[in-house]
Image 1 (spheres, helix red, strand yellow):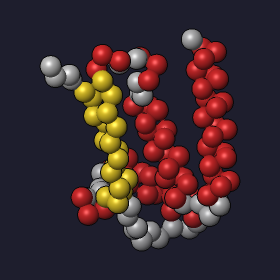
Image 2: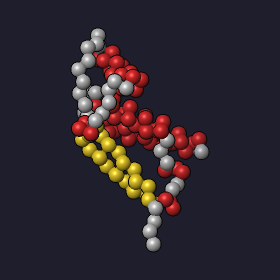
Image 3: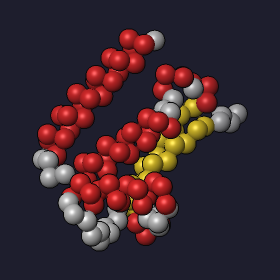
Image 4: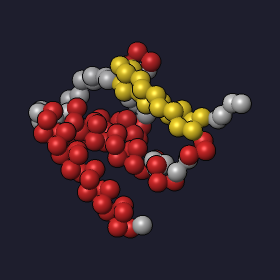
Length: 111
């Protein structure tokens, strides 16, 4: 007997683009606008540096484990921010864990 599975793929891409701007913040804002609002910056297969996959059985599809598009976009924003900062990895990891714990507590309080 076969079972149905949901396979989630996550690709990590990396690209460097030269940007002329008055400040680092302005450069980041410009790149954000170019990527999300104009489609001028696109990632190709050559830009993919890592792909991970996870399998989840359909019969255990728990609504509490489903990630919304807003949550995925927020995670992408976090990853982009981390890439553009010079913060040590350990500090970023600690901040990320604390943020996730806080958000989990907020979600539990709302349910």
